[in-house]
Length: 162
Image (tube, rainbow, N blue to C red):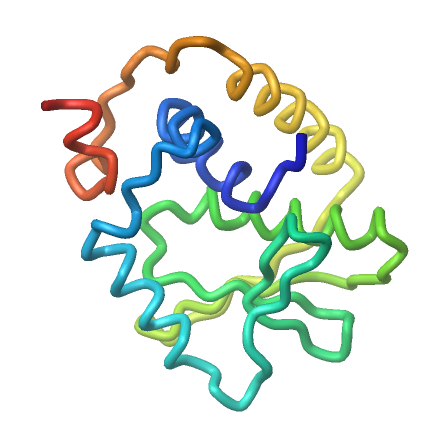
């Protein structure tokens, strides 16, 4: 299975959302928050080349000098997921022999940046996460619903609660 950055992001957001995504149950295209995030991503940092898709697996917002990855996020509401997504991108590219030094999460609306590095312990954790992603995505049924504050703004809200 090819694990994308979205898989890693959803793993940290919601295991049920991850399962739905892996089964091609896609609700994001209907969600206003997702559309706003895409618009922000497209309109920010125009001076940099657009998104870079690598091996049809990871879609990086932009790269500077093939050393620093940048990921654009709308808010810090799910910051941990964004950090691990970027760590996964760094790991993925290093595994391909590209010497990525670090990553930066850009929050244009907040005028903030968060530097992200990848340690050996992060690599070990990512390997555990990837194994767990494979386990979750091969299950016949979705994981049990875990209600969280972010559920109210989730593209999958109706799937889970209606």
